[in-house]
Image (tube, rainbow, N blue to C red):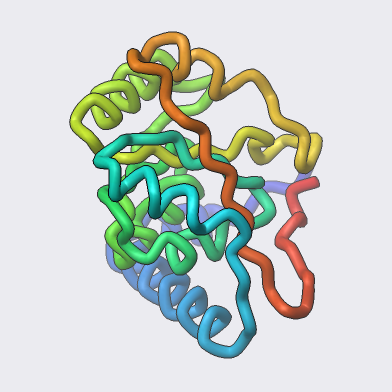
Length: 176
């Protein structure tokens, strides 16, 4: 494996570069959304649950992650489970432009603390978003990651699958 040059690694840790990159990513998401036709399958379910004042777990495939902030459209306070790794922090900071807050954690790092935070957010009446297939795949195959949340949180949360789809039918699946 080839590692990045030292100057590149150092510059990627720059707070200014991090902020600029997050701003550019947020603009790119808005551009893609504005220049495509989108449908959101199952949009009536979260709207009904929010009208009833209920919290829920929003689940969507990792390859459709990029457009979730636009598909969500600030329906309710949303807290996404996002990796605590440096690239996960870039994603987390980029989605804050859309009103989506993050919960740092993954199965390998910070999982139990993230689980407790997700349960607290659900108890507070907010919604939690997860990607059940994760970045390592296999793509569109749910892992057992959402089961601990359902076991810990009472009452049992509804799981709402979301699938924003472009008119072109493309997905971002470079990680598989």
